[in-house]
Image 1 (cartoon, rainbow, N blue to C red):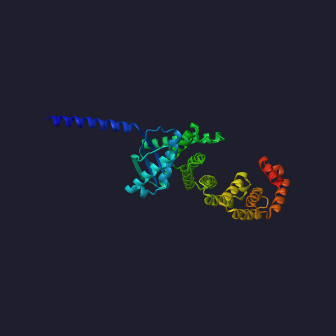
Image 2: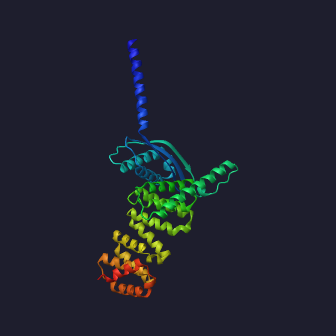
Image 3: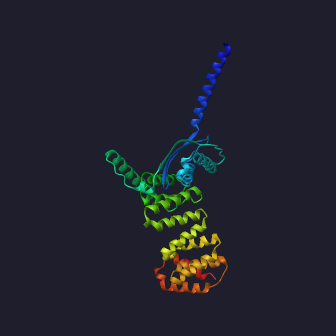
Length: 349
């Protein structure tokens, strides 16, 4: 009888220990909640990270962006499968540990994994409903999405130099992401979201998400091709993918060759071919562009710079003579930055 009583006491003590342990574990869980929109599905995901660490806002931004990037790489079929969910869980753990110092997270816990199969066309179509309350909810969502878009877009217009560690930036980023979630049918919302992701140039997941957002924006409105290509260009450069960057900048110049006169585009062209090592290809492309558009000073400036990096002097004197002629003829029309750049190149022996 004594043994039975002692055993019952042991059971009660052990049970109370388990309850206390579970409560302590629950207190140490950090929830990550987000909605991920991909081309043919959306995923409402909530998972918990067991950790005794405090997660600052910047870290949570990186973790959310990393989650979005990982999910968007998956197909709908993979995410439906048990193995796919396990694989995603492992990748999330690796991503979280890479974003945290001295982190030893070994697993995460899904508390919501709601996969919806939807094509973008379905997501963006105007769903009619006979029930007035559903219509009202839809209107409210669109109004809220517009409000969040305007708030985040205002931040982009106002801030000349963006500090990605500031609370204002992080709030603007969340507002922009919320706008795409509440109303994924607006191309400009996706462009705005991508623009806010680009400043996180050292965060691979952010650049992948910017790339995806830009492509969704283009699928919604083909007229935004120039804006989308500018975003893709910067995203690929930030990812050090200079092959894709060279393809994008060529596509931009084939549609609008005059863009080469924008010093940002001209310098970006030089950077892409300098870092890729394909200097000769860049020089040949610019030479062809100049032959068709002799007055495009941006192309001449870029070719001279590539020759200097490549340590070649072929045709450089002729290029400078052409640049000197353009400067004399159009000096009054040139901006101060362009004039200054041309003077520097002509004075450089």
